[in-house]
Amino acid sequence: MDASDLRRQRLEMLLNLARVARGWSRSQLARALDRDPTKIVPESANPKMDYLVRLAETLEWPVGEVIEAIWSGGATASASSPAPTTSFEEYNDLIAEAVRAADYRRVVELSQAMFRVARTGDERAHAFIREAAGWDGMGRYPKVLEAARLGLQQGPLSVRLRLVLQATLANAQYTLWDLTPALGTSEVLADWYEANPPTKRHDWKRVAYVYYVRGNTRRQLVAMEPENHETHAQAARADLTRAYDLYTSLARELGDESLNGIANTCKGGIIEVEVELGQRDARAAVTEMLSALETVDPARSTVAGDWIESYGWWCIFGSNIALRHLKGRELQQAMGVFMSKALAIAERLDNWAMRERVFTIQFALHNLMVDSTGLDLAFTIDDQERSLISATMGRFPSFRSTGWKILETARVVQGAKESNRWAATTG
Image (cartoon, rainbow, N blue to C red):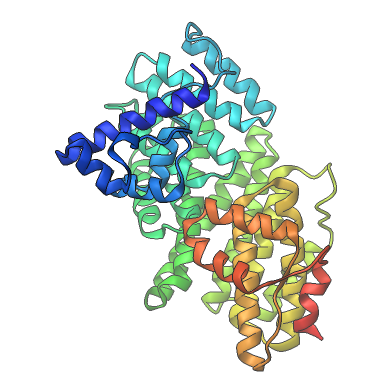
């Protein structure tokens, strides 16, 4: 069966499902879809958007899920996936190879195939953990969230797998700015580890990760919930300090330098919240962070990934401080450095979460400049940035309104340089 026939079959299944769910006749369904009763299924099996919207409304499904059901199917393996006779253990090895090759689309395909041969709740949960990692590698965070949730629904699980899935869920919630659920999930995990500390030193990495997620969630909530400013800032500092201490000690004991990179991210977050607590001077903190960034060259291939990523987040933390506490040329000059270097690091790492922060902060600064000067300053982007903004909108639902504003109002130029963007605000 070719792809067109397969799509037609899936579409017919959805139409039958809609008719049964509504208790409608074929004629009633046709009226709802604004179709001739004899031509409910489009001849091309490639329905137009108005048709898909009406079908989604009839099914009471999100449009995206209708599209995915037609084009992808719930459990259809790709043509390149191994034969169904492949064992669970063999899939595990194939996924490990795909991860090493950074072929994250392949990781997702293999994980979905692994799920279909899984025999136990733990094996099915393991498949979802692997799938979540693949989606994370592609920056598809809503898919990470979905995989983690489905993994947790696989019945009673071993404690280890349940904790991994809950941590994956919490981090995806935090990344997508779903902060209240992220805080709740990470609270559950932190409480569990307080009562049940790991017996193996290696497993303390999971504890450090929980404090990292909860601390950063609290850090974000400092700005989102000003009425709880002091409470969130104090808690964020405590959690990020705990994570920093654990990561640095584990890096030394396990000989894993990448953990020092994560610790450095914690250090940057601590600087931000200490400014919010009045324990650091904002101007001095920005100067310290800019000084640290002087030696960071995103193009250097010898710099470890976790270290270079940590300085990308330092750029974001420094931008947060500058936007809240600096003004005029001092603000503009600091932001020019922070944003240009953060975008370069995001490009090197293909880090979509960092891109979302860069575009959001750039647009916030632009609006601040317009409001403070009263001038109609142009926000410029180039073709590559326009494509990245569009892709970021798909990955971050919370960014879509900002993304639309940028795309609708920005002036698109050919080969825009970062210096051009800041010319309007620093000249």
